[in-house]
Amino acid sequence: MMTRTLRSAPLWLLYAFLYLPILVVIGMSFNANDSAYRWTGFSLQWYPALLGDAEIMGGLRTTLIVAVGTTVISVVLGTLLAMALERYLPSRALDAAAAAPAVMPDIMLAIGLLAFYTLVGIALSPVSVILAHSVFGIAFVAAVVRVRLAGMDPSLEEASRDLGASSVKTFWSVTLPGMRPAIIAGALLAFTLSLDEFTVAFFTASPAEPTLPIVIYSSVRFGVTPQINALATLLLLVSFIAVILAQRASRLGDSLRREGK
Figure 1 (cartoon, rainbow, N blue to C red):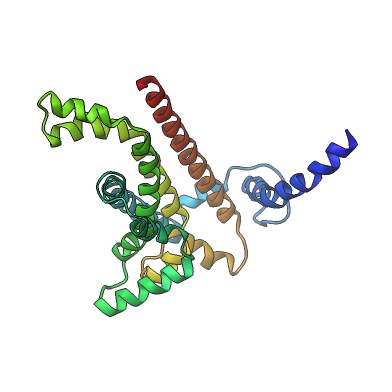
Figure 2 (cartoon, rainbow, N blue to C red; figure 1 turned 180 degrees about the horizontal axis):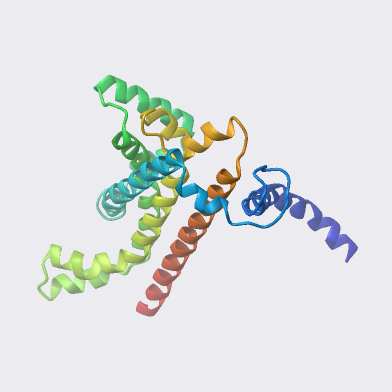
């Protein structure tokens, strides 16, 4: 028993290192004191206070616009890319090119996109951030959808065409419903990544319309406030919900695939 405890001690230390700071932030968001480091009692006052902070609300508005736009573009183009690579243009070179934005360091991607925007004359705005986030969002969506496509039975589409359905009808009635769980999972993943992303947004966003992570960064340079703790708690909750929904969608797809077999 002692040996097992000693073996698991590094793992628990790692968990403590990763999650204790997060738990402290969540706990201090309910602190009645305006100090982020001294607990004086339980209170929910900092959550309504967020609504009165114009800078935070502006950043949240921009972030939601960027996240929704990124999700739409990533889902449409990522799904088409997954179908092309899995069904029509199988190539290791194309696979590597499609996955590159997902594994490339954020700072390299951010500098490259900023240089490209400067070269072609694209002004920095929420649109430029949407396009930048879509670069890696498409890669993640394509990876998720490809896994689903690889597990789908192609004979179902062949049977649909043999029964007289056109390619478009087969896509809408057979292929798309089969991919739906993976598309939902990819959409939630793209939304969550865009919601929390900082580095790329920092280089490609307009100073007049910063995203929420940039607003948070600007605020914590002068000290962590209870409002920031409350905001971080809400963002963590949204991310957890999105990840759980993505996992449920993925499991639903696996269940449907097993039932189809």
